[in-house]
Length: 78
Image 1 (cartoon, one colour):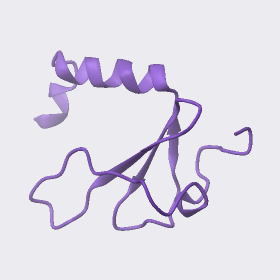
Image 2 (cartoon, one colour; image 1 turned 60 degrees about the vertical axis):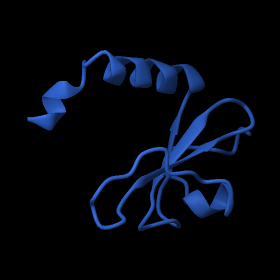
Image 3 (cartoon, rainbow, N blue to C red; image 1 turned 180 degrees about the vertical axis):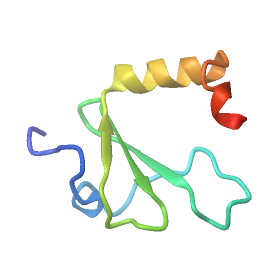
Image 4 (spheres, rainbow, N blue to C red; image 1 turned 30 degrees about the horizontal axis):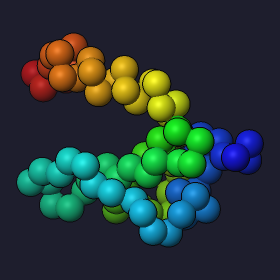
């Protein structure tokens, strides 16, 4: 999967398998995620499925989720 890179069109990664692990009352504008075969995680904007994907390492995503759970991102809610 060396040809996967940040900013690549999300539709080139997969057309199926994207999931919305969280959603809110935002009119359908959600973040969708796709776990890649090598453990990395791709994120895309649900309203732009052909738009750019952000590619994160599996460890980076796990660290991010743990930080959010522990409250380290609460400043974003202010």
